[in-house]
Amino acid sequence: MFYTLIHTIHIYSVFIYGGFLFVDILFLSKMKQTLSEEEHKKAREAIMMHVRKVVPYALIVAVASGLYLFSQIFGKISDNGMSTFQMILSIKAFFGLWLGFRGINQKLFGIQPWVFKAHIFPFTLVVIIILLSQFMYL
Ligand code: HEM
Image (cartoon, rainbow, N blue to C red):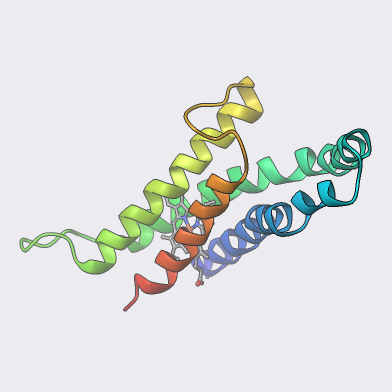
């Protein structure tokens, strides 16, 4: 029951975080096509001031809930080495932690570690993470 609750929280938080990245990449980035540079700056800030109050925290919740799920579901590594599930889950968790590390650093300490300048890279990682989290059960 507790696992299901945390799993549900994981999905919602991932939905908020990933959802923003999808909207940003697919739609908000297109504002430049019809707005002047000044208008675009203003319009983007009008949205980002609300995004900053929610999305970074959704990422923190996604990572914290993910760590709990991981601790419950990963299981023991057998003598033959890791199962496919364990390998794919490890890769997914690594990418998720990378996003979390970067997000927490940016939010709490104002630093931009590694290559994240635009949202296209975190967006790509989220697409990959979602694919991995579906295929790890095959
Ligand atoms: C922003 C980063 C993350 C995204 C976008 C993400 C996305 C997802 C998605 C879409 C699922 C599948 C849910 C379902 O089909 O029911 C999932 C499940 C899972 N995630 Fe994450 N996740 C992230 C971070 C993490 C982290 C950092 C960890 C662990 C350290 C983690 C561990 C797990 C585990 C163990 C499951 C399997 C839960 C289950 O099936 O019972 N996730 N995640």
